[in-house]
Length: 313
Image (tube, rainbow, N blue to C red):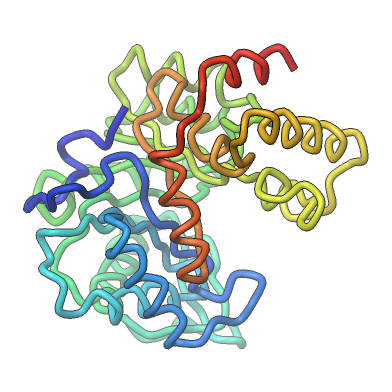
């Protein structure tokens, strides 16, 4: 599969990836503080590796990720990259006061109102230094009914006006995401951590429904917080230490991959692309080395025998 036409750069770059994107939560200080220079280097490494799809959000570092991505892409022809960001949360200072438009704050709070969507987008455009967004997601809307009533019509209007090229919803949980596929006019949905080698919950209803309705799926969280990148060194699932049984299962997956001479993290990156409706994968990275590693996964030789063995497991 590959990014659908509406999510590809308006000006193609020969040899650029058409299935992998850079997740920019890590350069927003996710778990670990990242220096500005290191964030710049990470984005530059992604460009050098042929990555042209960049996924960020106001929630990532309370605006820091967007600001850093915008700075790192300054001077890069806008039509040569695709920018995805999100709405549905308001950036606030430590005391809970909303920050000025385009500023970076200390935290975010939910805001699914129409005005909240428009203000959030205005701030994102400023931090990213652009006049348009290619893909605008609604970010983890916990109240689906409110989101369908107030936020989604605003996203649809922005798409109709050409301010954004495509709209969608990004969530961890597949059941509410399936509701958006059924009840909203979305182009794409992002499912995080539920279409992986260890967690298949997104595959039972969400993916078939998306395929039937022509809605694209972008898979994120393919390492389940680290356990599928390094089961020994980072045995974390959903941001906490994985149960012992899951750690054992991940080590077994890694051992099988090693027998075929393939890295587990490369297999984990590619796995969602074998599923119906999944068009692309977004992988987060905080260093150039991490970028180089996940970019290599796109061309890694993974024999069908390995996939069959993993399926048996």
